[in-house]
Image (cartoon, rainbow, N blue to C red):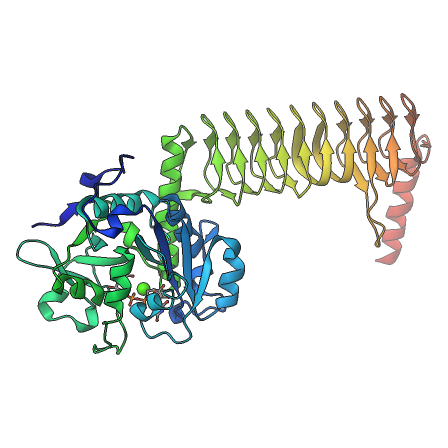
Amino acid sequence: MIFECKSEAAGKPSGRPAEKRGSRAVSSGNIVGIVLAAGLGKRMKSKLHKVLHPVCGKPMVSHVLGALEGAGVRRIVVVVGHGAEEVRAALGGRAEFAMQERQLGTGHAVRAAEALLAGEEGLAVVACGDSPLLRAETLSGMIALHRERGAAATVLTAVVDDPGGLGRIVRGADGAVERIVEAKDASEEERNIREINAGTYVFDLRLLFEALARVKNENRQGEYYLTDVVSILREEGRPVLGYRAADPAEAFGVNDRAELAEAERLMRRRINREHMMNGVTIVDPETTYIDADVSIGRDTVVHPGTMLRGGTRIGEGCVIGPQCDITDSEVADGAAVRHSVLNGAVVGARTTVGPFAYLRPGTRLGEDVKIGDFVETKNAWIGDGSKVSHLAYVGDARIGRNVNFGCGAITVNYDGYSKSETIVEDDAFIGSNVNLVAPVRIGRGAFVVAGSTITKDVGEDDMAVARERQTNKPGYAKTLRARLIARKMNRT
Ligand code: UD1
Ligand code: CA
């Protein structure tokens, strides 16, 4: 029998009930997940646990959990050791945790989860916490194939140009997977095999733990290899499948910072491609950095040098970039943001921002607002149709609709000890270079004259002027100039 199967052939799970072949695994729909994350990750040379290093804005292990969840895995046990507390804190309620006190190998690690999973039946998906590119679709494909063929184990494999230190898939004359040999234990001939073990598996849960109990550590590394389960199951005459990943990137594991950058690059390409397929124009995908959880509406154009991070949501028909750095912000339909930094900001429909604006947390811009160059906002609500066109600071402020906030005008919100609020009501006009010393309220339709330092409230439709009256001295410039020249001559 040939158990070889390409993922393209396996296709997506059809949704119909799995074929029953008499095995307990097949008859139960239950799937649990085991994620290995106890290793030290020495080569990262980091205080941060390897699996917590972010790839496209999310810890690696979080991507792995997402893939498992997406494939319908009901219960996930993460095997932790080094940095257990950090991993636990980062993943919280999404998983249960099993402690592997000493890292004696991947087989030993899986056994650490056994007690927690006692009484469970069905399938176990085992994955490594450092393989962020694993996709839910691939796991679903593996699970479907595994069930269809009544397999004992299904191993995710990939054919790569440089198999390096990865485990090699050894197939028999009939093409069936016979065993997995680690690079360090491989013969010359085996080392030439280019099909590698991705480190992701589907097992019959019960058979997995039965086989693991028989795994020995008689190998070059003196470790208990999870991969030895394959040959044990085969010796028992049980079917083991290889499921070849359509995209070898899915097998990519991160061991050092160079591989971290490579994982980031591969993930970035995948994310950008998905947005483009969904109707977003990305002018230069090579210089566009979009985190995994960002959403972008159709017909939005993203220009080069743009980073969209965290939980940022961009609407339809927006123009973003060039050179924007937008984190945890919302940009509504038809808005345009150029050369700007946004963090925790909400931008209303058709509003324009930048170039060179800095919108800080708590900024909420209404619709058709204009925020121009060198404007900073923080905890500021700015109503529909208002304009802050240049060189302004709006902090701790509630600005109404159709307000003009002049060039160089600022809110003076901080006295060195506490912050105070500025309120500007609808249709007010704040002239250039005005200081609004908070707490202060500018009434509806009021007019604040340029250069004023406002310390008292201004009533509705009132005009406020708070500056020295100007005096002109006719012809005096000439006199002054003559005096200044004379003084300079005397000195030299
Ligand atoms: C393993 C596979 C190899 C495969 C490769 C894919 C074995 C024996 N080899 O090798 O065939 O090609 O993954 O990346 O399984 N871990 C623990 N506890 C331990 C040891 C490891 O939790 O005692 C965790 C690590 O944190 C890591 C994962 O298991 O997340 C894989 O361990 P690693 O040492 O990187 O295995 P490889 O040697 O890369
Ligand atoms: Ca590894």
